[in-house]
Length: 314
Image (cartoon, rainbow, N blue to C red; front, side, top):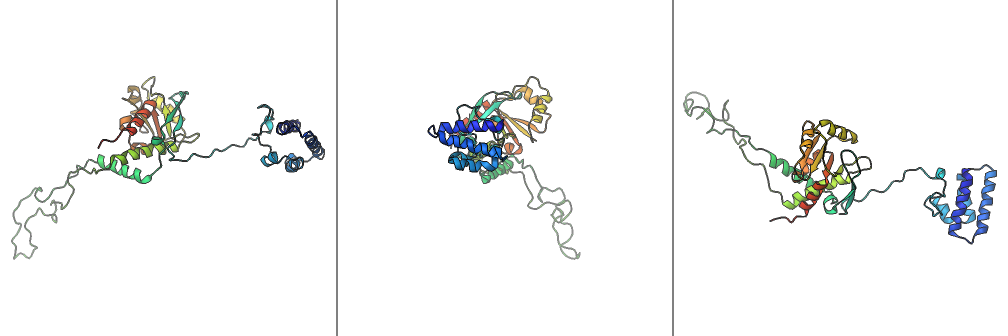
């Protein structure tokens, strides 16, 4: 029955391409009937058949399902190829706007959102990320370490023994660095470890981090998610736990909201070491790299894009 359907489909397809070749169509049916009587397989006769009847386009495609037909269901469904079609990955860093689906904690469809290409699709540069991370870690270092110099160590200032005549080495104080409980020479003192980094470089680092998360998105494993909002029915921690368990291969989640953090969301995540919440004003490169999944609200995306487009004050 499937073979007969194939004959009908081939005949109808060939009619669409050339209506003046009725003799060629009859000859093709004759050849197929002969092949059926000789119990030969379709795969062995496919190339020779199309070569004899003069189907160069169909023969090269091997009965491709993309050939024009009269209706969408004229080609038998049992003969369609079940091979997975792989689409090529997009090029990263082309400054192209990205379209991403919007959902929520209940995995409901909330439409689509366009991400600005100059923020979420910039070229990836590891050197910029390295500079920004070093700047962040140095800036947040407390720098409260302190050691005592010889003038700050407690002890007497008297000369311990005479300069000569004792056979011992000459010393003028027991508070020197060579003595126990003595001073520390050239030790650390309280200071700021921060150094200057240009605002353009810091802004570019945040764009690269967001672009890296958007570029890592795959069919079943998304690194960048956009939510319509972060509203939770209650403050129970199980709400966040149940959602994170649905994400494949996710270890740490960073949720970024546009304005003040919702109280229920704050209480639901405060006992989870793998779920953190930040306002959009506090989004930074180090926090993005520390979490493998970034979840942003619509409001947060809009505010981040607005911040990246604001001219830098000099």
